[in-house]
Length: 85
Length: 334
Image (cartoon, chains in turn red, cyan):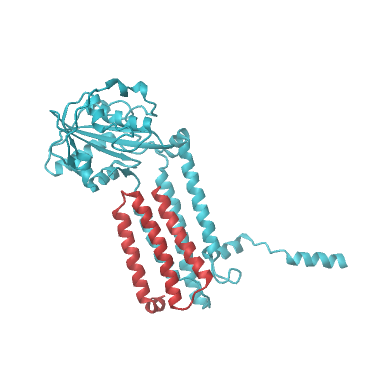
């Protein structure tokens, strides 16, 4: 794992910042459920594109990987949107 | 002989049935049968899991369409207590050096009438679809005000969370800590709003006096013209078809709180929000544990495979889990 982190240091830093900012905003606007739903959608899209771009950059991209990121993002978005309903 | 051979061939094409143990390993542990990736982490399994999440969520919420069942099993009423609302509101005021608000019977009736009106007309807003303003309920209750204000909330599980939400909203906070207000009326009412059992909380603030009015919910001082006719009978209990629950508040008399207010303290078996949160958290924990185990096994076995980055997936689901834990229900009108 540390080897992987070193190799993709910048990509993981971006992902960490993205998730941290998202978590802050999601908690900050806890009264506004509609905004929380948009934020959940944004995290899903952001994570999907981050995953695809990271793999494209390292030239290790397959349709399986794209579907994996899509499915992971979908599940995360679904959990966050459903809890706000 | 030939028949026996045919049978044997047919049997060999049949997929092998997995034992429970094999199925378990296949689901959570990387191996040959699942292409060195736990079956749970395959895209098609994750999609299936998403449908399971949707189905369970729908099941939890389907109970809401059966109010009697919901009250008995899930207890969709909340633990909001009018006494606690009053105490918490006054605590906020006294901490800022302001005088505590006194309960006013007429403002209580105005708050109850507003809650009942929202249920009967099926809306959730400061102003009714027919244009009825909050001040109409206050006037109809016979309260003559100099200043008046209104705070609304719904679906909160506890009084603390609700008051915290109000204090986080500048316009609602302004009502709570407004030095002009001296009296308050409260109503906590259960009913069905747009097909869902819910609990509405109404706070009516007032300062007795002349005609000038302040619409503090929007943070602006405005002067509303006095209504031409005050149809006091218009909002009588007989006209309303609200699912109002009898008062269960022990100390309600001492506060002069009106009938129809509701506190369900100690009666809730399962709160829907906590039930949903628990189920979702279980899903998140299951995925994180599978990802961690997969990373550990694949690293030790040195599998050559092209899959998504487990560490990134773990980061994503840790964030989701963290937000689920911190998530609080309830809504207020900005």
